Image 1 (cartoon, helix red, strand yellow):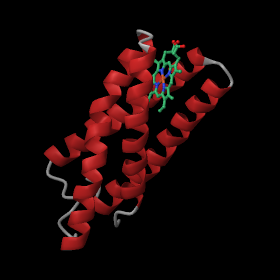
Image 2 (cartoon, helix red, strand yellow):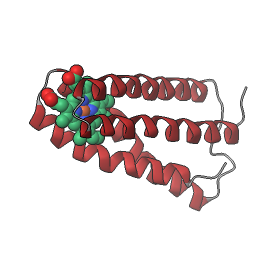
Image 3 (cartoon, protein in one colour):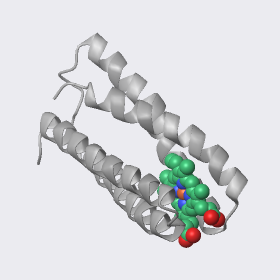
Length: 129
Ligand code: HEM
């Protein structure tokens, strides 16, 4: 069974990797390739959700990630969750509004999602491992 620090480090690597995918999908938009944007973000969606499911399963199996955290680090984890949980909840809405071409709603959600995802990455990379 992996240790807490190993899991946190792996999560950091995965978050950076999927963020590169998200950035590539925005480049596709700039290049006027909305379908490519959709394909890349479908991969982004699947990989991110898979990460969430595997991480949750490890927690269910009793792996502890925050037992060694001091109070400040626990607060940092809480702050991180304020960003990461809503971003994960928004992802299905991003896919649905993109695929059904609800442009205005997709754009509005994209603004909120971009802020939440930026917060997820910044606060996540700062966590101890
Ligand atoms: C974060 C900033 C994002 C911006 C600014 C953005 C913007 C757009 C725009 C302008 C389109 C084209 C709509 C059209 O021409 O009808 C589009 C399509 C789409 N977007 Fe996004 N999007 C973002 C993030 C996401 C995310 C995070 C996802 C999914 C996880 C996503 C999934 C899709 C899908 C599936 C399409 C349909 C592509 C197609 O097959 O035509 N987008 N997006």
